[in-house]
Image 1 (cartoon, rainbow, N blue to C red):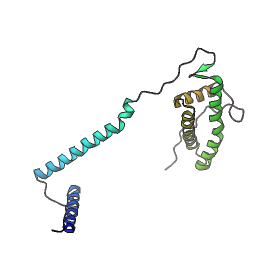
Image 2 (cartoon, rainbow, N blue to C red):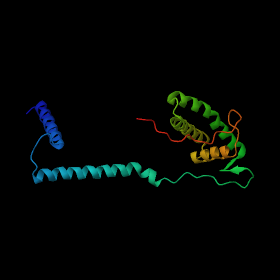
Image 3 (cartoon, one colour):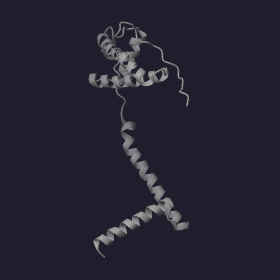
Image 4 (cartoon, rainbow, N blue to C red):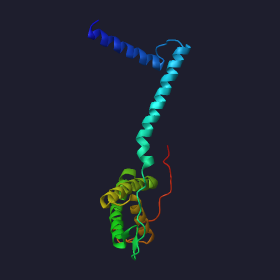
Length: 172
């Protein structure tokens, strides 16, 4: 038997095995056939569980990133002086009008979708800012919250809007 014949036979067996597995090639529903299918399904499930555990172990074992405690100095929160916190807030607040305008272009008169898209852009900005400043993203969100509650001025000199559009699903 030539190499070409062996390859053709292997392909034929592979195709037949795939057809049998899908149920397109009836070989009967005898106990051995059902046992083979059940064993293959169990092996596949165990393999999937092992892969899942190996991939997600880093998430389970990772320690949460630390959030710095308030310092002894006046005006220090989250390990940052107020001037740094205000600078972070100003950077996020400066990006908001552009994010809103971009979302309005994409979602027209759908206030909830506009707000959702704006928040998505804000999340990207928070992640980038936290990475650049080497601080926890939660700290950036806490600083944003602090600035909104304290009514720190935004890019236009007015405080940021502290309201969210109510959920109003689009008609289908």
